[in-house]
Length: 636
Image 1 (cartoon, rainbow, N blue to C red):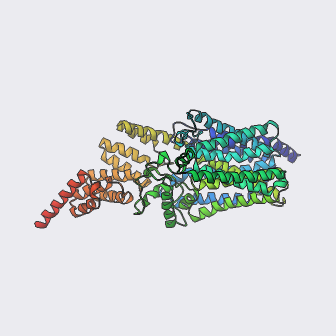
Image 2: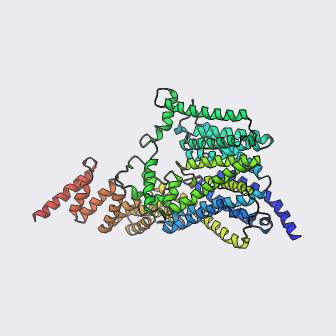
């Protein structure tokens, strides 16, 4: 009798949990922003995600609910691979220079893993999950595209807006490229909804698919366009392969082939016009060759140069990586490579290598790359099996949509950093859950349930989520105070800057989103106020948090020199000069330190290493002074 009541309770609760889970994952989460943060979406959504998961996990593990779930699905190879990747992410912090820099990555990956697990448990327990999934995805696409279209409305003057104009269209994401790739996740589900959803929902899905496609084209994100092409190719091949089973008429299949051939011909023809005097040629050249916002730098935005640096970092740390979140800290160690020129890049604030796979290998080592590759590979293999073997038409369509979305994600990940974003990671985790559920449904149900009592699972999971929420809340507060400190710096309000930096200090996060140590902001203010002991204490903490940051090294060296600690100052300026060979400030400060310390030969060597046309007046004066003192010393 008690078991029957439990199952009845589960059957009543599970549909509500599924609807809430899908609505939160596909719609609500992506509306959370905080305009007071550097990145209005990242940390606020991390906090919202972890809070929602705390509620969702607790509700799912209630005895009345969990008894109605098939826990054997958690033995799926996809779930196991995701767990391994999470473990490697956590373990990589053991090798990190700055552990706190990896907390965002760790908690974001933990959140994505829990989304995957909840999806695997809840979706198959709801008979109408396929319809609910597509309805939520279509609604999410309409909301997300609607926000972008509202923003884009102000960019239209005459003709097609330029890429520069479209950079203002972010759809509550942090930039236009990430927004475009975010929309790409929705498109396959919308197209699938056109086929599978009943009644008026089919029309709504068609409208959503059209809006998303049009907006992706307008946003002019080259990486997303390539991802869209990959998604279309995968979906097209799968539809042609299973055309009969899907009920596609021979004429429709021939039409698909004709459309694909026409598309290829159009792309080739358009490419042939590039560089000519035609309007199409000039438009393509502007989009793909000469980007107005990159006119002063490489046409690829510096990606190939950063990929070069990243591969060198991987070669230096192949097994351990440099630790989650520590790519940006270790990057400056490679600025001194003689064959790389960073002068045309904003290299001080380059945070990501714009390639998820290289990024994973750099921070988490080859084991992390293998785990992530296995996760994607197992997902692709599972979807292929469903497409080839399933006799359920709806499951095949869903598998095709998931495969298209996965292909688009993989291609975009080669040129951008979707894995860094909370919204993208949640959508990816949901896609993985769909693939797992579809593949699990293909197997005979002989797998043993995963018998982990709720009292054993819930406490550590809730503890991890609580820690993540505390971290996210602290990070949001820090970002706002760091902004206040920078504004005070701009206004020359050194007392205000120091006070804001102190309020921003938290052991949870020692770097702001620009990878600048918060302790540096306080130290800079103290230095300007003439409080040298306090400035040195703050700048030494900043040096520990990010030992390669130019401004930390330079200002700490200045503080040391002002107190007569020339040997310590020389160490700082030498590191800075080696890390940033294209910057003159550390070289000039190093030469001045040698002069003050009476090491004239070394001062001459430093200044003479700088080309004559680049030497400042102070350098020239220092060089003359050093040579005079050396001549005088030689004549004595």
